[in-house]
Amino acid sequence: MARDSDRSATVATAFGRARGYESAARVQRLVADDLARRIVAAGVATRPDLLELGCGTGFLTAALRGALTGARWTVTDLSPAMVERARRSMADALGADARWLALDGERADRSLGRFDLIASSMAFQWFEDLPGAIGRLASMLKPGGLLAFATMVDGSFEEWTSIVEALGWPRATPTYPSAERIGAMAPAGFDVRVDQVAFPDPQRDGRSFLRDLKAIGAGTPAPGYRPLPPAVLREAMARFDAGPRTVSYAIAFCLARAPGP
Image 1 (cartoon, one colour):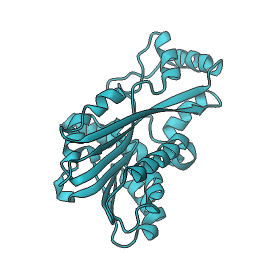
Image 2 (tube, one colour):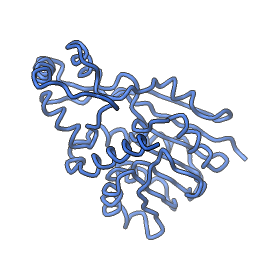
Image 3 (cartoon, one colour):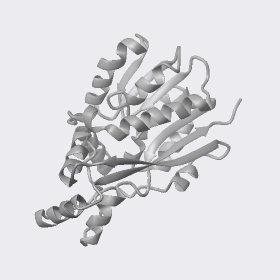
Image 4 (cartoon, helix red, strand yellow):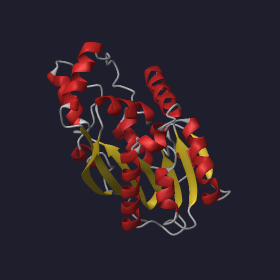
């Protein structure tokens, strides 16, 4: 448990220091908008009780606000700094009854309440026990409630990681599950749909890619990873700059509907 807590603290600190998040998080904004459209199309209860996990600066919050009239919001993030930034930008729009909480979404429990919608955009890839988290969150849904999330899956950043591996070094990114594996994690009886979409993100060069990762707080490597030696890093950036100068986010959109009453 101590190791889990240490990694959670590291991730929270990284995102809390991500001052350039708004300008660098191009794909994060696109994914949040796409997830919001899918949630609305799937249908949500009138005046839903809504729990958002990993709110960041509020991309998904803003995308859902206009469509979910009368929603009762509980907006959360692992990073207290991110919660505060989202609160400053969205508090007036959500109203005085909205709750703004710093908490670890992977370890959320029923003391928060029961919800018609639990939503999260690009936070679940940081969970260390994704099946366990999905099970806990599913148990917090009301009958017929919807768990809807977008998360990175196998194949993300393949353009960069293939270069690093060709140089004889392991990839820094965590090992993401496949979209198929994620779909199988929902509890029995849930109606599940999973769609995988690629989001290419053109880069000026390798240095700008690595700088943007830090700017969005996503530079925390996989546990046990050793940084590339300077000479290897320079060679990796040179190969990246020679082509493709693009990194792709492989995103799974998962909508899991709890059984009805």
